[in-house]
Length: 222
Image (cartoon, rainbow, N blue to C red; front, side, top):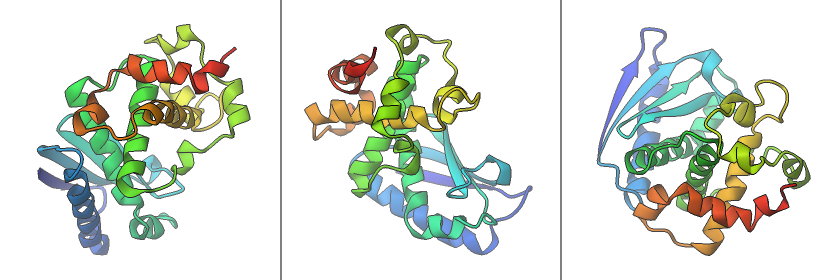
């Protein structure tokens, strides 16, 4: 697994955190290698305070099968904790799963496909680290979730508002609703496929995962 780190430091260097960040990424790489082969990967690292998740001082983003970015704000009061408690490793694993899926079947262009991709990435992290759902994967309770379930036409729409569904950007939906719903959707599928192999983790068809969810969380849709 050839992973190359590219430090973008014109906007601010990583100073004393650089070695720790590299160590955490290497720890993630070693774990991921046992479950999901990703042979070549470029990882951009940058400091952009306004672009991170405030609760952890960092955020990941996958661009294609061979490229992801990790954006961090070492001045964020939550950054040191997130660096020490495995959050960075889990961010890496989440985005690496996205990269693997992009190289297999693609992230997807509809709401349903995006929910599947995000849910699978979250469940992959949980399987890899034995970790509980991230804050964005348990952001709303089940009752609230059920009042915001998408209709079939919405699931199949390529014109959905990603920022609204996943970030509550327009105020019409709770923040992180999409990530929580995605985690439930992938969980319904995983209940029937408890030990996916590498190809299945990244290559399962979105329709297959959604079919399991129609018997689970989506069955409550009105």
